[in-house]
Image (cartoon, rainbow, N blue to C red; front, side):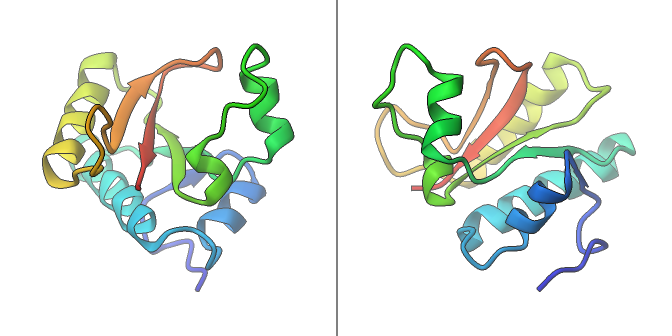
Length: 129
């Protein structure tokens, strides 16, 4: 199912669009990202940008070169990165808190939505267990 109009969502590149609509992507993640897109569109009049969906092991090692065995939910189609360019940190934190109130990750010490920067800019990392 690919319908660019399903959510008000921009994509970093055609790759992210293809991965977002892939049947490999965890369906829970698809709907959480959609909810974020609707929230940002309704509240702020913006279409957030999906910047990362699936990640290969090599891509993971480039992001975390000092942790070569570190695994990511992106490698298992259970993580996405999204940013609403033009919104400040407080607005992103509000989105994060909203998502975490609705969706529990299910593992102590972990959250469904994190606002962080791992060296490529501040963004929301959304994950499901």
